Amino acid sequence: MLVDVGGKSEGVLPFRELSLAVDPKLLRVGDTLEVMVHRIDELDGTLFLSERRARALKTWEKVIEAHNRDEVIEATVTQVVKGGVLVDLGMRGFVPASQIRRQPVGNLDELVGQHLRLKVIDLDHKRHRVVLSQRLVLEEELQAKKQELLDTLEVGQIREGVVVRLADFGAFVDLGGIDGLIHNSELAYARIKHPSEVVKIGDVVQVEIMKFDPEAKKVSLSLKHALPDPWDQYADRLYETNKLKAQIVKVTPNYLLVEVIPGILAMVPKGEFDISAQFAAGQEVEVTLLTINHATRRITASIQHVADVPPEEIEQYAAEEEIGIDAAAQPPTESPAAQ
Image 1 (cartoon, one colour):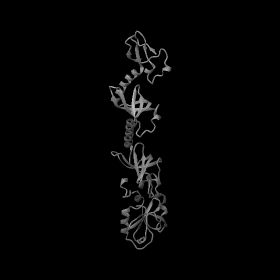
Image 2 (cartoon, helix red, strand yellow):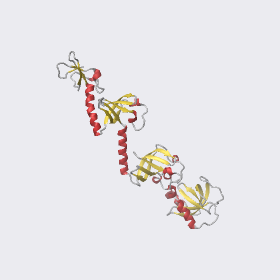
Image 3 (cartoon, one colour):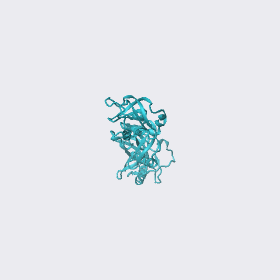
Image 4 (spheres, one colour):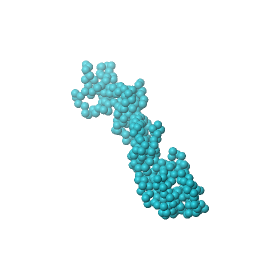
């Protein structure tokens, strides 16, 4: 192309000196371009022009300004190269593969043509080279989102979240930037061995905020508190002398814990079961309900009446175990990792 730059003759602009932002097929006589003189022929004085270099020089100034102000730059991925991708800023920029997302990127070719939001992490002033990161932008946005969420969290709130990970001691739920833990004891009123009995990864759940540490950004959640309370549902069906099937959940020398209804526990004190018999967790037994205290949600029962047990001894066992719905809420001592 011949371009009038106000000299004695037109300058020559080769197509190779056009940036990717300019399509030569769309150029018409009379169009205006920003160019720079990058070479003068010593013999005839011909000016050789470059739109690409002019754009790069102007862009370099904008890149430096964006870097100084810690601003986000938008650019399009143009090419996959060793170790990352090139983007068009008006000049070429390099984004390492490790700086594209917070998680590893599988196929870089899929990024060609996509727009990235970037921040400058390295500048080479001599060579006019720039290294950028989208991961930095994403991490800063995530931290801001976490802080915003922490500022609005309150104990007792019901929040929606997504189950993202299961562990032996509980389930982790993404509340929208912060992961909270639902301990096994807070997943259901009934006793469970593994969180997979109640939830699976990807489930959307309503959880209650039990407690949170703004400094450590740790949140403890409860799923069962957002569910119907089995005591409210079934307690009126329980009465003294009632006989029913129950499942043993804990065996000690002085008492047994049995689940008479999912989420409702009863204590069978020593003297109300045969201590010579072999009992095991998970075993089904028939029990007779002896006492029901609706105020404290404590129930005592008998498997086989052997001897009278002093009331104060029963109270001692009950105090140790916190019988009832409250007992199911206590984290087991054998799972310190759950803390």
